[in-house]
Image 1 (cartoon, rainbow, N blue to C red):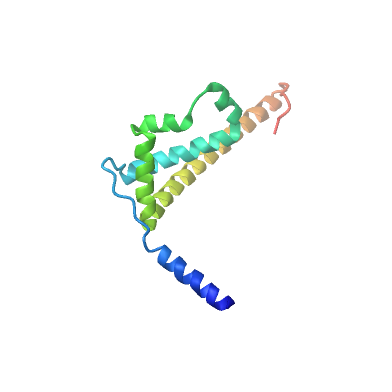
Image 2: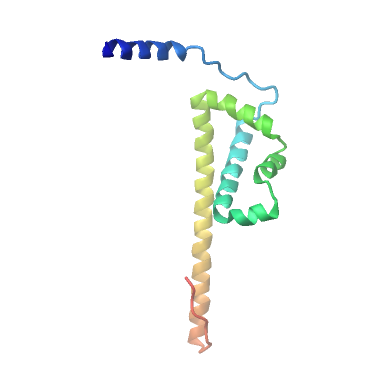
Length: 140
């Protein structure tokens, strides 16, 4: 009896998934390269929220709307385009991989800038100390 119930659930699940409709291609579909730009910017705004959300709330800025406005799209156009691309897993994976590559490149660039800033600061402190100039304590 238990096996029959499991078989019935599996068969119903299989047939229940057969009528999933793919979203239609929107008339104003956002091109893939622009979707990569928008998603990259969206991920960065989400990171900003996690760093200083209170400031963003107090300033009254809606970061998502700002991103859409920056790229000349609206939230509905973005949602429809995102749903269309997400329906094709290979297409969406390509978009997400491009976003990931861009974010990784941005992180590497930021890290290299931080290293240069630290080297510059350390050099200036060393020179000041060599000349007997009082240097404030470093704050890590």
